[in-house]
Amino acid sequence: MNKTNSSNESSTSSAAVSMSAYQKHKANRSDANQSIICAASEQKPTKGAHTRKVVSRALAIAGLSHLDGQTLIDDTIRSIHVEDMKQRIHALFNGATKNLKGAYAEQRARERLRFVTVIHSVDALNVDCTIAHTKTLKQEMTATLGQLGLGSVGVVELEVVSAELMGLSQSDRADSFQRKKKVIADLTPPVHQSDTSLCMVHYHGVIDLGNNPNEEHLRRTLKQNQHWGRTGYQVEVKQLSEHWGGNRKSVLENLDHIAAYITKGGNKFKDGQVYMEYKLTFDQGDLDYEAELIAGWKTHPELQREQKEKGLENPLSMTYADIAFAIEAIDQLMQVGYVIASQTKSTTRR
Image (cartoon, rainbow, N blue to C red; front, side, top):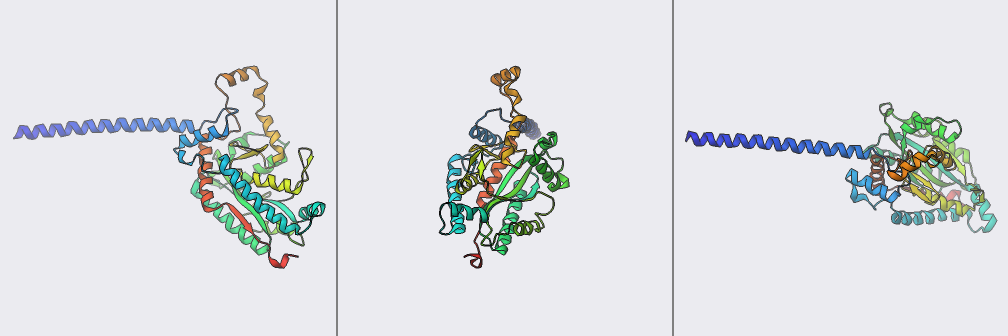
């Protein structure tokens, strides 16, 4: 009897030791896997990597493959949203120009329509925090435009900014670089000042100033909001550009470009293509300056050889971790709604 008990106790003890060792091995293997995943997520895609493949890899590393092909970054989905946005903005154009045609419609549209940007917040790469900011921006912008009685079509957008690259880059050439650097520094909460990457929540939209256009009143009203007057350059109200790349651009061509730009889903939009890259400047016209920062590898023989053999990191590319965050946040934003639209009050119509 005692032997049996002793044997059972011994077996139980042995099993406990064996199970403990197995669990320890499993935990160690899990830690090792997590270390590998963490290291991979902090890597950047090589120069010239296709956006589609970059996104798929980023989501796979983060365990978010179910989001692949489900957000604005996907070409098919984005094209649907771009067409919807074009229709919305064309309706705004028609409301501003009424029955006018040709040059008269162009002139009226340029008098009344403005492209507006409002930087709402810069905060940590936290999806819940980001969506909370987007909801506040949407509520505040809807209320402000409703108060003004102005028609508009716009969106809440997200951009992952590299505080690290902004800090390393020193330039007095691009004014929009300096403006962006200041906005990021001024709006980032103290607790996140040392973060390498941050999320900038902002508004882009086309606003109809109405029958009696008062651009300065719109600008002043936006800056009076507690969220949008904390530092300079948070609010920008611009007339529609008449030229791009040396060519004259009609109002509708301009509006179609805006529709594609504000539904890009990615971090950067250039020549009709979306890139998951950090953008160092505010203005689209300064993207050529950014390109110069990473052009050196093309003319250096040793770097060219390294590029062919194993690929070079693209310095401006987002890390896989930042890409995964952006797509997860955009997925959530699409669910809560990213479009902000308002109707012109009847009292301001002709």
